[in-house]
Length: 182
Image 1 (tube, rainbow, N blue to C red):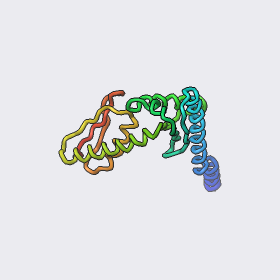
Image 2: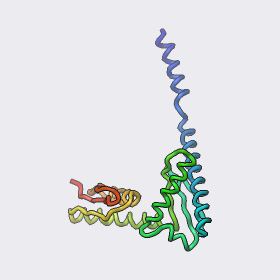
Image 3: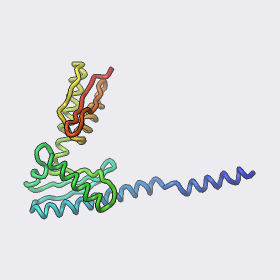
Image 4: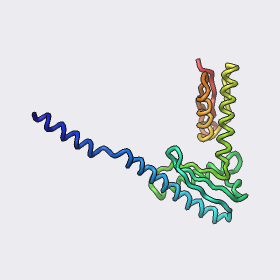
């Protein structure tokens, strides 16, 4: 009889201590919006200091804050050669968000649509490389890429049956290798 009395008590306690999934999702969304706001303020101050024109757009996609700067002609300077300045600016923005919120940010920054265009370009490269490897049977090694670029390649290769990809090497020379599956 004591087991019957104790068991419902345990169930009640565990129900009270289990966080509500909707509340958890709402808290995550709130944190991501806060990250976007902090990043937007940081980038707005930067644009003012540089005397660059640009509109900042804040969004939440795939569980991360996404900040885009669109507009003025000077923005391409914030992208740099092959996105190197953009990568550095994204990291600085993430640090500013972390300093303000106390939480490591996975924020994604795009300037002048560069990342969106690059994503399309890399998806095509990944798909065509996968198809070539499937046809020839020979592995393909791509040039070194950033983690952002490698992820897009891996996703594109994964969409083609009969091939797979792996990353090899050390940063900053890490590259994707595409293999025909056995």
